[in-house]
Amino acid sequence: MGLEDRDALRVLHDAFNPDDPDLVHRFYTHWFALDVSVRDLFPPEMDGQRAAFAHALRWVFGELVAQRADEPVAFLAQLGRDHRKYGVLPAHYDTLRRALYATLRSCLSEAWSGAVERAADQSLNLITGVMSGAAESDDGPAWWDATVIEQSRVSRDLAVVRVQPDRPLHFHAGQYLNVHVPQCPRRWRFLSPAIPPDAGGGGIEFHVRVVPGGIVSNAIVCETRPGDRWRLSSPHGGLRVDRDGGDVLMVAGSTGLAPLRALIMELSRYAENPRVHLFFGARYLCELYDLRTLWQIAAHNPWLSVSPVSEYNRDPSWAADYPDVSPPRGLHVRQTGRLPDVVTKYGGWGDRQILISGGPAMIRATKAALIAKGAPPERIQHDPLSR
Ligand SMILES: Cc1cc2nc3c(=O)[nH]c(=O)nc-3n(C[C@H](O)[C@H](O)[C@H](O)COP(=O)(O)OP(=O)(O)OC[C@H]3O[C@@H](n4cnc5c(N)ncnc54)[C@H](O)[C@@H]3O)c2cc1C
Ligand code: HEM
Image 1 (cartoon, rainbow, N blue to C red):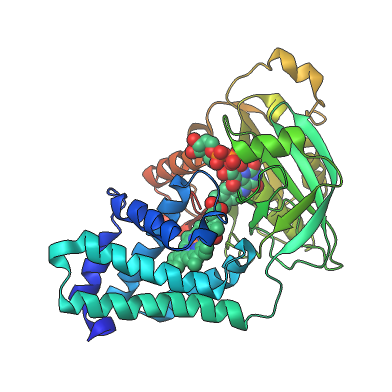
Image 2: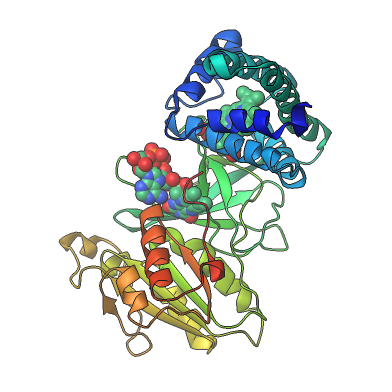
């Protein structure tokens, strides 16, 4: 039976319980003891990694329980190809499989029957086999190295960074990349290009905001300098505008602007577009770092309108140390309040394609407020809330 035994597969699915991380904790301890070469590939703090690993496997086992193979196999193949950038070798999959099998057997104790053993054996062979097979058979680049050519501090907590990849990196406007910076070895973070890809293999621009206590965002905003060498992954994500799909609402919190700005710039290559209304929000007006560019795009593209939104209606004293972001008067009416409240003052925007981008709390709150006002959830797009 094995991969056809839905009851046995369900036992394995349930083992990756997000409310009980004990199994995944034990698995990594076991794996690092079994294969000492593995620990050095991971960052010191493992909480996010354990959660991402459990989330991925729970989803895969859920699909196997439903006897769906196409999507999980495609997902695992992509994950395996992407894992090459971490320095993963075929032998690591073998030790992972053995460690995970042993941990499942010991943690499931009474529930570990002959049927579960067969399902575990076959599913772990499938999962590790697909990942390592896809990694080995891909002769495309495992990562892209890039040089920082410019870093500008556009506000106290915000930087715009331009990098030049050594070779062309193809992505779509609206996608995001996994990024590794030299100040933070082994700590990869997602960032969204803020300009569309350049067919000539040109530079990529990122907008980065310091997260309080955040290791990588602080390093990028405070320590990154021209000449730094960054490492970039293949692109992920699918935020998109369907040019035949009706008018568009975009809601950007702080650097959540980046992928939406790339999509807007992409649209500006066409003469005719659906109407796009962008709400761009931050705590202070001085943190709406890109208003001037948005103003310039809107001035030449009548399909775009922009509403600047700030939580507070006065700037802090440190605003004077950074560039003035306010565009010429007239085109935009600034509003004060939190994005979910300001956006839904105009209703649920149910007839629009809706794209939300920003921190996880802002995305959750804006999505809930729009749905409460009648927006159909299936019309709302956003990136994953964490990795
Ligand atoms: C799909 C995607 C695209 C992203 N694109 C961008 C981008 O273009 N520009 C950008 O600046 N950031 C972006 N991020 C966020 C970025 O990947 C990092 O999570 C963020 O920079 C924090 O990393 P850190 O190492 O500084 O913080 P960590 O050291 O990892 O975390 C420090 C603390 O901050 C919390 N935290 C982590 N991320 C956030 C967050 N986004 N908002 C609030 N609290 C957080 C953590 O829970 C932790 O408590 C994106 C995230 C995702 C998932
Ligand atoms: C069952 C097989 C595996 C699954 C399901 C899995 C899943 C994941 C997921 C979901 C992530 C989160 C980020 C990303 O998508 O890249 C991740 C990161 C990572 N994985 Fe795996 N992985 C597997 C096997 C391996 C193996 C064999 C190695 C070898 C050492 C490995 C090393 C890493 C490293 C180094 C990271 C980055 C950690 C970080 O940036 O914090 N993984 N993995």
